[in-house]
Image (cartoon, rainbow, N blue to C red; front, top):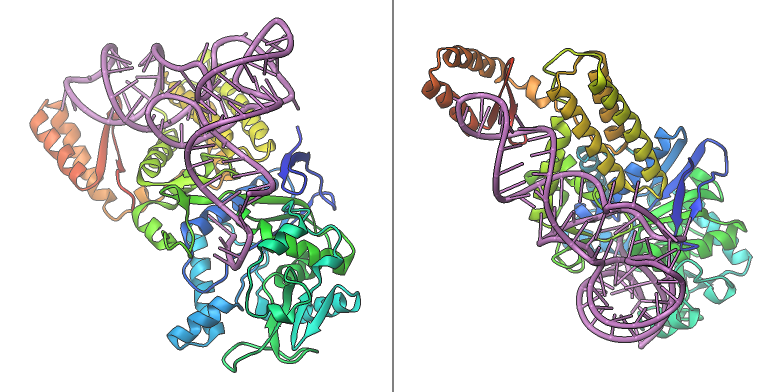
Length: 469
RNA sequence: GGCGACGUAGCCAAGUUGGUUAAGGCAGGGGUCUGCAAAACCCCGAUCGCGGGUUCGAAUCCCGCCGUCGCCUCCA
């Protein structure tokens, strides 16, 4: 049983082999921090979080690097509009981003470098590229000479002729030898732009070079996995490859993984289209894991449509998963039902792993988790309890946690209201024994209005919060 | 215009290197349990966008058509 991953470079699923046994070096492109993150960022972060968790589950040590682009035209413009220091503005949104990622239960990347802290490495790479003839200086700017790179376009499968002919006329084009060339370094044009001294004067890095420099500095010339959204394939990742491979004379990454775009009302959600749902908005309406269920429910490479209906479906699905963790009602620990349960556990784990091994098929894996849920519920109904039952539940929790789902909600027990609710339920049990249904129902309905769902079983009543905390 | 992806039950969606009864979830209908309810469990639905073709056999391969979406400019 071995992992296969779809590689954008070959457009095929390939056997996963790391450069160093047992260690995965993974670089994922992070956000440009000039505004709050939206649910598209959340989707991408969850996708690579799950990939990382599964690799760790399989026993790899994962060194996960994600960058923050904190030096960029948009940040500069935003800072001008709001009268702030560009780097302070960026810092504010970096803090916000990290907070959002924590709320979404994303494991923090191992290393989170920024452009502003990688300047030396960037300058070093640009200089090497110039020395090797892959780049040239032009009035304080430095450009990459695309025509020097004979396999340019191999990731996006784009012919250079096309790239050139569709290239729009932009400011600065007259400084380039060729319209397809792209900036490695930009000269400072105004005193309010962040700038650093360089052999070409004061200036700042172009967009693509930062990732090349960070990947090399923290992970070495060749990494195992390079990830990001499909929208980054061209030009960003194509240019990263051009720079890094021309500079280091080594492949930049073995596997290129790209997640599909999140769509809203049939079109891609993006800042430029203005159809944004922020992570704050998402979390004001739904629990983080509801969104995670939505993401897990379809393949990471496919586009993902977001709307209230699918979110409601995801919410119910999450409830079903959690429902399997309710305590047993009996104590039977042997018999055919126990064997059936143990078989279901075994099968669920095997199928879960087989699905995940097939290019992180989370939707399939999740389906097998639901099979286990059913087996647990059936066992509970059959009066199974004790160790076999606990083991099944703990297996479910383990597999769910590989997907980043936290099925146990501490909120219930931790609530200040718990003792009072339990007192009410005790009173209600007495009433039920006396067949005072009106009063018993009055308490149940009253609690329901407060968001507490009461459930009666043979051995007594249980309760849970119906709505999110 | 160039490159690419996708189209499976009311909705989401797995399966697509061809081969037993096309996973799973949500919604809906029927039933069991229950004082009622909730939860849970059982039963019920698709021949896989459309039209051809290859094959003993196709959702899975080939051709055509229709539709949706992405990239080609900043973007996860």
